[in-house]
Length: 320
DNA sequence: AAATGTGGCAACCGCCTGCTA
DNA sequence: TTAGCAGGCGGTTGCCACATT
Image (cartoon, rainbow, N blue to C red; front, top):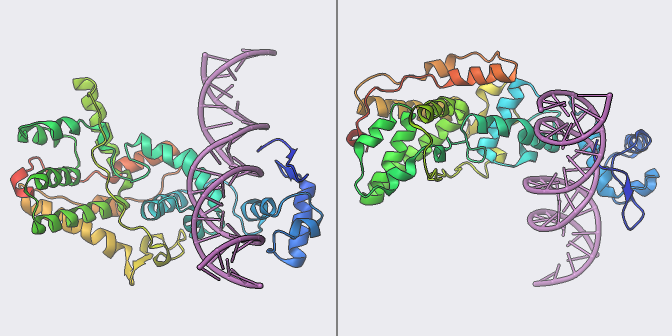
């Protein structure tokens, strides 16, 4: 594993660590404790730079490191925290006991990122990849075609549709009140994404079906990049373990349910009140058990994650 | 069985921040 | 105020193991 043994210009060894080097490092730290990494290699009899020693210790040799495959709960925690924190691997790792930032980062890049992409989610924003949809033609049409928008409802999450419609509409008729309304809706949509990052698999599936039926869409252009509004809240999120996942506090003593699910439920209610009156339920989301294990099973579970009812008719005028 | 491709991950690199003199 | 240093962090590299052809 890693790189081939080599030395830098100062004669310090680079590349994979040998068991002998590991032993020296562990022995030294057991006696003197970690820290003062610059002088440590010399004192420990290692031909390594201090930085290399620190990385070896923090990423591999530390006794509290948990090795092995990430559990489903850990994976979900990483996804949730990443949706809030972004690529703050150390902050994410700090909330996963026994995991290092390097390990979390590697796991994200090799497993989770690909999974999100496969589900039609942007791994950076955790939002549905609307570039997969032919929204550019909608935006570029000189005469806004409502029927084409309604045609999309067959496979677009109502939240996405509502957000698109408000974005489109306010580009023509922006006023402070509507702007506020739009920002509120965007916040609610993003909150929903935190809870339902994987939900757009249904969206992607419908898109793929549409591709099969109608042929490939032309000029897929990124049209929507929601801003992650929860940056710099690292200190507000407590350590998350598998046992407290369901109720950890986010802000000011409010729990996840209040912060995420309430806006989400409100948004469902908005849709319900303004659409044809059909129910829009998140019950299935809340009641779905976390019991899958394999990657395919997880995908399957995630597809169920967003199986709430989509209103059969969605009135554009009422939405805005 | 050999060649080639791909995924996983340990380790490195370079930048940034905070501390201290 | 500023320069130097140590440590931390995120991005990237490159080797090994395994899968596929």
